[in-house]
Length: 90
Image 1 (cartoon, rainbow, N blue to C red):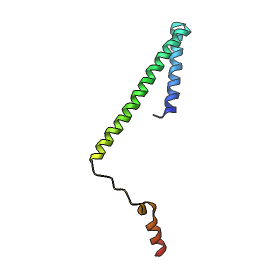
Image 2 (cartoon, one colour):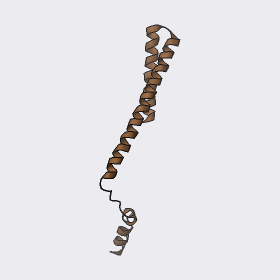
Image 3 (cartoon, rainbow, N blue to C red):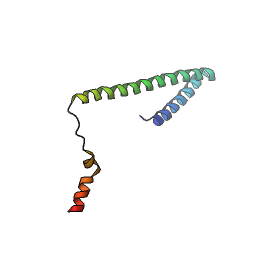
């Protein structure tokens, strides 16, 4: 999930929580406190999700290192120099 998408979703969620708690209790300060707690929980969840994504990539990269090495083209093949020279000669 991209950070701007997460930020918009989190803001909307916190506004809903703020309105819901205010409607339930009638206290602005209590609803603000619960909204702050919800923001902390959301941030902790996002942080843990990012750590799991990073850990998943590093463990899969370690598994990929044990397999055959990737075939990387040489610089002449990659840039198309040989193909260009051959097409101009013939």
